[in-house]
Length: 325
Ligand code: MTE
Figure (cartoon, rainbow, N blue to C red):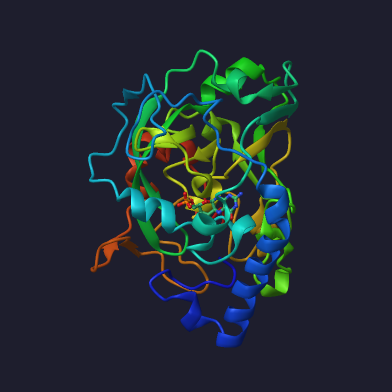
């Protein structure tokens, strides 16, 4: 993001060629050095039981369709799983699909901490306990002005939050991604070459986190989430720019003060805490008025709150959305 321009321009064209090639070589070389550690790992099947053969042999069972789904045609599996932002596996869109394949997602623990009564290290099975998985077709708008429609499988984050019993002091929720340089070659990339400060952190205000549209996703297209899309569990907040939707979550912390999210920490002038999709507030380096849906030629107009205004605009009543970008 920091070093990227709108997605229709390949990074090979916008970055000095030498730097671009060095960056790719650097991340691939780092991937080589961690390969030995990674060969011992397997996928998520034992946690999220794959019930039957499906297109990719990872079908989730008991998935119900949700009335909250967008009525738009989803992007293809190919597009959703090969055009990704997951900087822990490199800054190029195709790097995560190549370099995240061996990420060890089982066993997986999500630590709950901070202002709540049920602090604990939860196995993924416990996070999913009692949840009905739902198909949620959501619009996904990246701050880089591209978008997709993704058929997630997930459940409301609110359900899990309630089980954690936050105290009255919990005003925000902070999420953290796994940071494991042995498995994540992109974390070796210095900030000057497009790397970030790790671990990746995101945050939501409590009412945003409790909103029925906010989900923890564990699958897409009815199958277990591929690693490059944030396996085994990631956030999706459909009215916000994609960077709020943190992947491979290992920690959820209830806090009193607004957390500092990774991109705000990196470049506060360009990336805010709220990150609500807003065609009227441009990114300092490009317009947010339009977007290119991956797979389409013509740009389309970006909708306020990514088209979810009826459901979420009231959360921001009275707020200056230019100041709170
Ligand atoms: N989470 C982590 N841990 N690392 C990342 O680099 N990128 C964010 C978000 N979550 C990112 C992350 C950005 S910028 C976007 S646009 C979305 O993931 C992309 O999600 P997708 O690859 O499933 O489309």
